[in-house]
Amino acid sequence: MTRPAISLRDVHLHLGSGRARVHVLRGITLDVDAGESVAILGPSGSGKSSLLMAMAGLEPAGSGAIEVAGTPIGSLDEDALARFRGAHAGIVFQSFHLIATMTALENVAIPLELGARAGDPWQRARAELEAVGLGARTGHYPAELSGGEQQRVALARALVTRPDILFADEPTGNLDGTTGEQVIELIFAAHRERAATLVLVTHDEALARRCSRVVRMADGMIVSDEPTPGPRRRKAAK
Image (cartoon, rainbow, N blue to C red; front, side, top):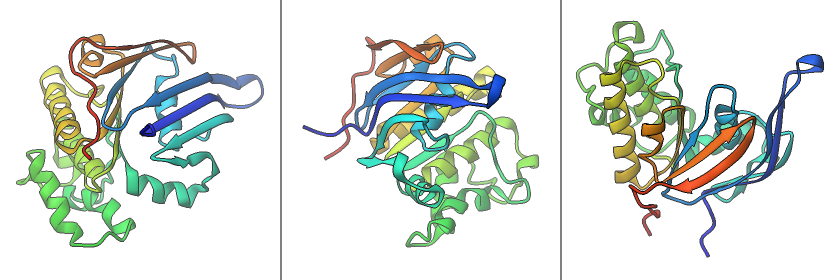
């Protein structure tokens, strides 16, 4: 039996301290199969972004077990987590998190340089920018790019390491409808063409239903987990 790409067992997460301490995730148990597309849907404050952060190892769980790509990430220190993400995960945030003093090409090449990957990082970074339609904008700085272009740079950066898993946290939240749709199409194309597992956090019901499953959250808990009638669950290529 194939192991899931992501597995959580009774995961709890608290944020803050003292009177400001909040129980953000309350006993989350969830499996995501390799190659599957899963939407985490819920209103603001439901814990959906915190769940993604825990899955990606960006927010350590207080208790419970999280296994990603066969590795128990709770036992990894910060350096090991960074290396693990560099090898297995690409992350796209609502706020683009580009480095203002670096060009689009330099921003995309960063994960390859930090990970000391084989091959020419600049060639791969340029290829990813061309894949998202920004081959003519490689030398531009973030301030010289539109919001949609910045998000496409962020997507190229997430994909340049050829990750097994793509995490997207409200990737269209700062974009207008037309531009957001272009970014979403690129994300789903990457999921299909690269057989990458996709975890998409959103509050948009229509967008969520483009995934093969919708996991609904409220008050830090999963309240439903159902397949959608549209796309079928896609297994990773053998």
